[in-house]
Image 1: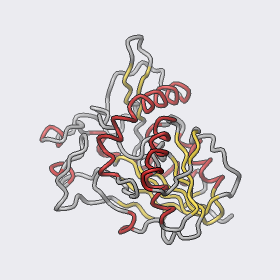
Image 2 (image 1 turned 60 degrees about the vertical axis):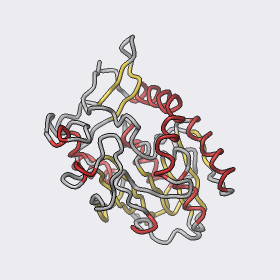
Image 3 (image 1 turned 30 degrees about the horizontal axis):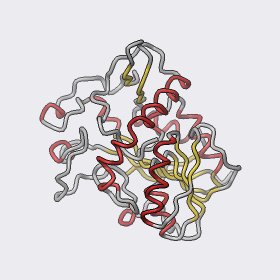
Image 4 (image 1 turned 180 degrees about the vertical axis):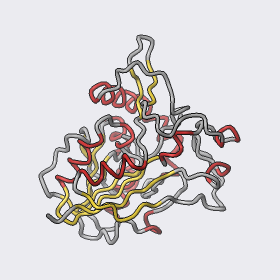
Amino acid sequence: MSRTPPPTAAASPHGRTDGRTDTRATTRANRAWWDANADEYQREHGAFLRDLGFVWGPEGLDEADAGLLGDVRGRAVLEVGCGAGQCTRWLRSRGASAVGVDLSFRQLRHGRRIDEGTRVDAPAVCADAAALPFGTGAFDLACSAYGALPFVADVDAVMGEVARVLRPGGRWVFSVSHPVRWAFADDPGPAGLVAEHSYFDRTPYAETDSAGHPSYVEHHRTLGDWVRAVTAAGFTLADLVEPEWPADHEETWGGWSPLRGRLIPGTSIFCCVRSTC
């Protein structure tokens, strides 16, 4: 999956749906969408993400400054929804034994291109986040910067898999669009400051093809939904970070913009710790 929101930013959180956005349909649609759009995504956003960078979201919060994962040197780290592996590569440059997983083969191909340019390999596998191809307790840390989680129908399955592959006491940090954004039009201008939809409407956003089949799907969850998913998988929520929009950050990314970012939150970062039991 993607590391950060798609270049279209899903236009509006309420697209056409026909009820066929279950796990299988969501996976099929998003794998095809990201394979088809990976080139444009990396071309448009690669400079912002940086080949050796770890950015948590459109606000530009850098892990080098935030330190949400702690000291990664010598730690085994899994990046879920790694895209072209920018975060994985940064982690490896800091001494971590990091590996990524992504649903999109084309995104991973961009990772190999960047590996050659930076001479820092970011190993990754093409797999579904709900069925991680790793052994139980294989990792000390797991992270995801806008990767996988907004694009899965069964978030409990993903949380359970991350808990399984983490060692007791392992840290799991992930960022997603702030749930309150679901209520607003995804517009970087003044229209994006007007609440148009119910925050509690969990109808997935789905773009459909000419036959009415989903071709891109995002699933909305409230803050409470995310907390319940985290705790149900055996994690403790240690912190919830809502990055503020930096005063000197003038870049617009889809519906993320200085105008909106300085008034309403755009990103939620959940910092979780796996139970030691």
